[in-house]
Length: 250
Image 1 (cartoon, one colour):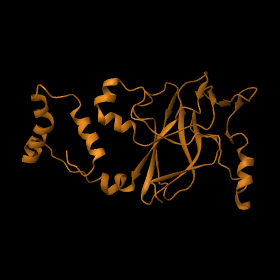
Image 2: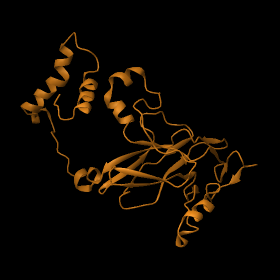
Image 3: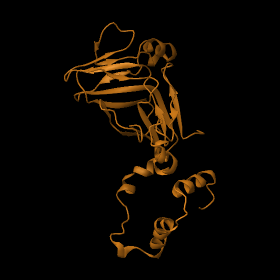
Image 4: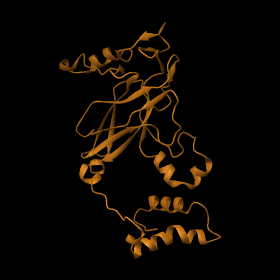
């Protein structure tokens, strides 16, 4: 496998995952976009995934309904296929898998929670997983909240979906096929392994700082602020140089 991840599109109408941009769909303040590499790097980490069609959900506090343009009226939602997908899946699948197309929308047992399939399956390189999360550095919507999940996509070959909590009742909640619903980010399994997370090192007080720590603090915090002619965004400039020339120490 030449890439860290390969995306498989099962719903042909679905937009392919797109590399997340550094400006959070143009919403970042200009100063952050220009000078804060930490923010722009986080925004660009991973790929955006999209709903495969425009549709709407409506929650009355008890039951969830759904609607799209070709529907005459709102319909109660339990689990539904993407329109026409069952027939397309069965035409392509081996006989043993006919009738096994993943559902597009599924209401989960917990109140107000819907699972939305992106129309994709993902496979990652060995020992790599995908974190599925809300869009990085974008303001949260006031009508939904996304759950985050880590899927070991090197071992599990199934639908790439996100679970959404509806947070508004008695009003339509709209989803657009041309606007990302979630961000997926590659993670090496060692990054979230128990041995990794359970064994951090600590410097518990200032007396624990060694000469190198104090030297680095001076180099990164004190010296730049003592220079009246310094250009803004020094960290961002250095980080960009490292990305262009990864073997060069800056």
